[in-house]
Length: 74
Image (cartoon, rainbow, N blue to C red; front, side, top):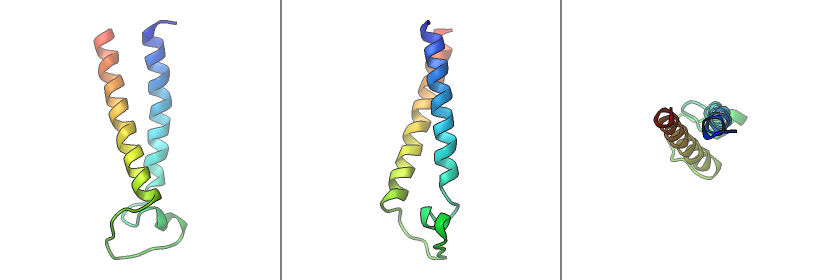
C-alpha cells in the first residue's frame, strides 16, 4: 500500500465520523434537545455538548488537512 491509499482510507473514516458528529448536534437546543429537553433560552455549551463541538471541529480540520495532503501528493 502506498501513502495515497492510506490517506484515502483515513479520509473515508474521518468523513464518516464527521458526518456522525454533525448529526448528533441538535439545531439550537444542543445535545439535550436530542433526548427531549428543549429550551428556548440560549445557553453555553457544557459537558458532552462542548466535547462534541470540539471533536467536530478537530475532525473537520484533520479532514481538510488530509485533503490538502492528498492534492500535494498527487
